[in-house]
Length: 290
Image (tube, rainbow, N blue to C red):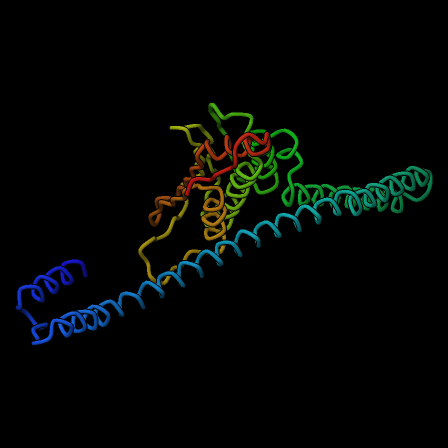
């Protein structure tokens, strides 16, 4: 547009080009009409781009709100499971144990049945406790990122029969809560995918500090898949990981090939954590990197 406008003005001044007329006023009017018609498509395009940008920002904001609401609901359900149902099951197990002890001198079948019921109640209570921890990790909330992921990996190995080795290196203790929760959820989702799709018995998890960022890697040596296969679209779990990382200024990468396993990498800048600390202290406004 600048080049066209320059040559049009030069041509009008020197009496050349399409804007030659007897009246100098017609030169200016012709030039203005030409520039207006030439600029109109660009103005429309700019309006469309701006509208699309606003729509994308609204969608990102909605996505962030949905994830936040999801976490609040998970927290509520976890507390209800722990404080209500789990406690009631614990009381039921105690009553069953007392009943079994009271029937020690009665028929052996009845006493054994009561002990079986007590064992089942204890197993249900343990499963509820595990579910509550998956929905909302009290270890993550009270002790931090490394203990939270370590505890989950141990529970996952015990309940799912997959050996999960967790290693960490130089992770600061003052990780922002939203960053810690983001990485914790990625570990959860990645290990669930290992259980569902990989058909392997082990999955290393590594968390480290690299180049002013927290780097998380979850890998397996399972069946993998073809990333270039057009019939295979990213699942909801992968989309959720990507969106969570975007909200904290992070980056996501997945590498896989058929029969060569899958590797998931996530990076979150440490300055996100520092900004969160500064915001809580009231020193400077928090800014997450784009």
